Length: 139
Length: 139
DNA sequence: CCGGATATTAGACAAAGTCCAGATTGCCGT
DNA sequence: ACGGCAATCTGGACTTTGTCTAATATCCGG
Ligand SMILES: [Mn+2]
Ligand SMILES: [Mn+2]
Ligand SMILES: [Zn+2]
Ligand SMILES: [Zn+2]
Image: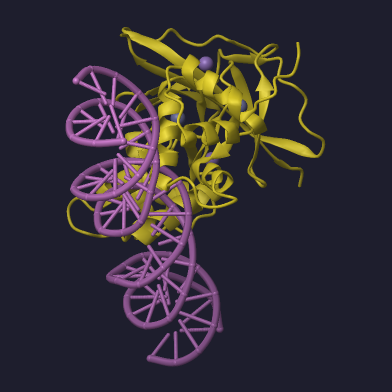
């Protein structure tokens, strides 16, 4: 199991494999997410992509993140009422959220077992199960 | 197990039992939530409380909901990126979210079992575990 | 009734996100 | 190279959710 190294060049292939036309802006945004392997808000992506000199507009950041979401390249994590996080890890996993600091980290779904859920309403299908463990510093 | 009937008069006692000074506005807001036993956004609370004629300001609705939260009278449900829901049901339970319609309903925690969670980081204590089942209409 | 504490208010403000009409880009056939 | 043409990108106006503040209103003990 070798650790993947996410270069900008790799990003073009990754985007194409998800039926996304690789443009300069899309490659930069994908690189921001995948090279860090972190949960980023749209604002953070915006800041990262425009560090050197302004390259990508706010509209494009939001449009691109939504496109990535639709194409299944990233996942959305809704845990903070004030902003959405985008997650380059699309394998099934859960989240640990430190309420004070806002730090968000992954919990491997491997060993977590959820049982006893009631049957779904008729005609409905599960889109996903989000498990969020909210923690704070001990008093 | 008799079904509780949430009258405005009952609300005063409920508020007092949570160390909340019962005022006209607070009683109206509590009544909106507890008489319906539904998950409501601040906007919905605002609309309900001001149906007949304008009675309560936006600032008061937000202040009051935050106060209820601090005093443990209601619970927050973060499931929709665009708004927070307030939940008069503070007993441990989970949620079913219909992505298309935005409908949010309770899942009794009674029979749900979650096992295999990793140990918490040192010095941290669990504030809550949120389990959200996201469903959509079958294709 | 007085005085202070508590609660409410209008409206300005901030932050996240959406929308649109115009400009840019990259590509294709000629 | 050139003229379309579709896809993409952009600034900036706009909307929505929520916060803040300074002034006012209400409540309550003495
Ligand atoms: Mn994928
Ligand atoms: Mn309680
Ligand atoms: Zn994650
Ligand atoms: Zn609930």
